[in-house]
Image (cartoon, rainbow, N blue to C red):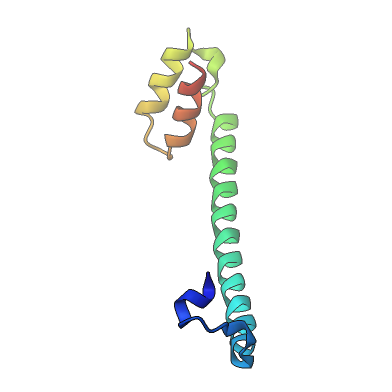
Length: 94
């Protein structure tokens, strides 16, 4: 498919293709790796904060609520942290 873009010529036979392909590919790999690392770190930090909050507050313990719907309502009203993931997770099992 690649030769179609270059008038039927195979650009992989060109030495300049390989001279530029590896450095650009490596730079691309470095940037994507940093982006993934940042995203992963932020996700872990948010999960850690959520677990700390659940551990430190007695109200967020599901045992203090009469049923799952009451707990879900509490999570929806609580604006101290991003509850989008936890609420959607709970609703998927409700």
